[in-house]
Length: 456
Ligand code: FCB
Image 1 (cartoon, rainbow, N blue to C red):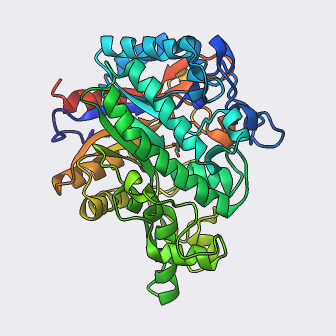
Image 2 (cartoon, rainbow, N blue to C red; image 1 turned 180 degrees about the vertical axis):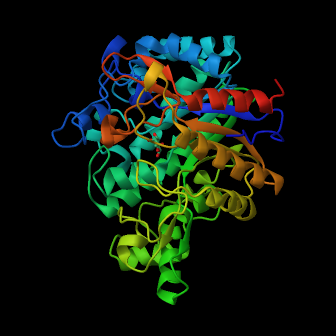
Image 3 (cartoon, rainbow, N blue to C red; image 1 turned 30 degrees about the vertical axis):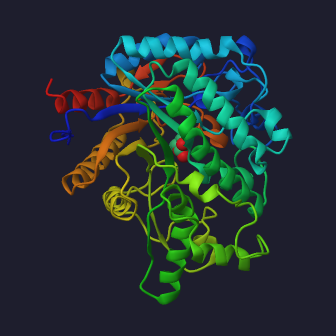
């Protein structure tokens, strides 16, 4: 399939993304402490296939091979996350220099091959000790995060320019605290709202800390999104869609961009009994401004969109099937393939919030790939998915949306959270028994697309 990458800006960031728990393994190496995901995955019944991240992609030991793969791919950017428990095994207290050493070497190796590190500080692996003290339900975790951000940015800030504070606070809050599907496995809507607030607050608090330590830093947050349309033009579906959008998108985007929590949703949550007052009690004076600390870019993670039908299940996305069949099909996650919604959502973000820059910090597709004859992993469906979403990105660029980068999720087939190893998102196929890595056809396609865009 033709690579739709001509006419991307010359300084566009072409990258791949990963996260610590999903690839690193080595949960106790060099003094690492236990995280909520280490803890959660070991509880019976939590992981779909009974797996854990104890080995994952063994990246902690194979990182040099993985950097070499990225050099071969030709990306100029790599987004990875730091495991908080490598830096502070118990979340606070004394710093574990050996843990920072790992990322220090990784950053140097990336720079040596011309790949800019994009560091995510939190991709869901809270230190278990902090969870036992109240986790994201507690405001104390906000301060702990700011301290952790300070230590990491002081250690790496002379070489790392691009920083992402939080990854997908909606997921961490709601799948972790309402649905119990993700660590820490709790099931209380009110707790999810509180945790979400503290995640956002921790973002705002960390921004100036990082800037102080990392001269010239560009700091942002990665928000997930679920664009949607009403399933029909019936008033009930139309208002369900507004509710869904408030629940899934506006509750996080609005405060980050200075609009505070949306008033329609505050009223809905109050009516649902999640708190007794007009203003949510977890919002303290000054929080709204702190969350809205200006950022240098928005990271947008985009996978799919849906049509919303009336009913609480759909308005608050409890995993009910999408209302309409997807003409472009579904990925292995069951997610409809909807590249057009990426273009329109990018335009909406630009119009409503006007971030200085937007990075597509994750986009990609899971398919059940396997090596065929000659060891070739023919993943045409992933190539098509990425090509369609790059074309959608280019359309937004042409319409004036300042998109400055695109990161494929993911470099490697890795541990897809509670779905374990049942999903393969990688450009590189990984044999989870032997750790053999085989670049898929999409790897070569993306390599050529990047080269084409950079005029090579
Ligand atoms: C996102 C996560 C990422 C990965 C993809 C498929 O929600 O940020 O870690 O699991 O989904």
